[in-house]
Image (cartoon, rainbow, N blue to C red; front, side, top):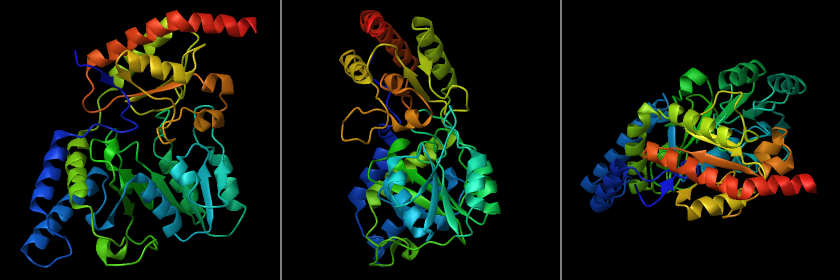
Length: 372
């Protein structure tokens, strides 16, 4: 058994060996993709190859893929670059969407975190101003999948453009730009076994896009600045290996069944909706999420509470609150996420440690809460 079980792939997935090798080759070769000499042409070929690999992952044309510094930049670029002042987003979006534009309209979600299409349709019909709708493909905390094709149908019928943050979905389940019908789609390499610091925004051919920075003509004049050659090469290699997705549904179901047997009052959030096969968000009755994260870490297991984008802080999940979860329960929610190098022993190790923690702390915590 390894020294620890890493079950926080939705935060970042360890670098795949193929991505590491591709990055080393690019670093050793060097070269600027914008140079016309031999070294530059070789570097350009690496970028072009990675662009094709990323495009294949999401069913896009290579010319539609714009490399960025990550998912946050991709999301910001889409919301600003679409050129629409009116922006409608779901209440469970990532902060890189929620904080990307001022005055955005927040669309409610149901108890599973699914956007209310009726409210969206009514909101769009309430104004003739051209709009942009941004709805994520899969939630980073619960794994819940949004009905993107239905969102597109409603939005396009009203003349709105659609952006989809697919950072958590790509590489785990099939994501198809054309099949979904979206105009913009965001990706991040480190969520699927590529390096951190590189991502992509797919801009459907014909969709409006205004770049947010000026300079050289890189990325077909859509993102100025010398390309991150090593990062892009690693991204391409990881995207190629991630094409088969993650076959972890059986492990997720095994985990949830075992944890609910240990603590029948526990709750799996989003269980009533289609979810990513690698993600479980579960509340342990009577035990704060921060306590769980620290206790499991001491047991050699890496998991998280909510999104891993709060400078190391464990905070109450805005996603769960938007789903109508009581604050006291949201504060006990843990996120467990599998990835490309997860093994069955990791699942069993987590079950055993979760059981020990619940027996040691959970029962007393519930009793104290009832007494209060």
